Length: 262
Figure (tube, rainbow, N blue to C red):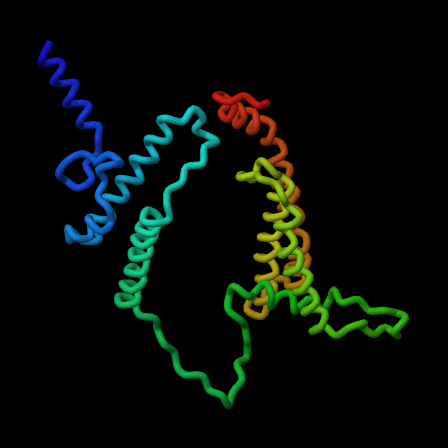
């Protein structure tokens, strides 16, 4: 009987996670303060480890005591838990960037010649979509009332197209006020997102049409730029709409298992 009791006590003790290498994590009233940890001079690594273990234990206790895990919002103080974690992650990525910069230095080409103009001028790759909107001259309508002349210049038309696209992107957060976390919960806005991504890729390809091989049909590329986004959007909407009923059933059965809806 005594051996069984001792074994149970040892098993209970091993369930606690050691935070400082000397014993179990201290209770709340015995947890050393920041100044006390600093005076121990154990270094940032040991301090970070203790706080990570403390956060993990608090999270585990909250989830164990909670009667409804799915809807509970678990959080920790900004200082020191979040600050220590962010400092650790930031230090890791900064060190990785410094290592790559030292091990793989970028190649520096010949300096630019101000007396010559490059044959092809392109912006950075992440601005190709905006550069492509400046090449929508074929969509600039000719008005018969003006004698077949265009209402505005192609360059002005491209700038206006940029304003329209950027304005729509800025309005999306105000138009979509839902609380969905997954695309299947809002098929329409998911389809809008897919439409935007495909359109950005296609208009970026159109912006560098001078770099495409001669066998590429530029006119077909221009048509696909405005056709493929709609096709991708409709397909996305149809797939998510078909998945939504079964998905929401499984989701609600899991969410309302412990707390039925009112």
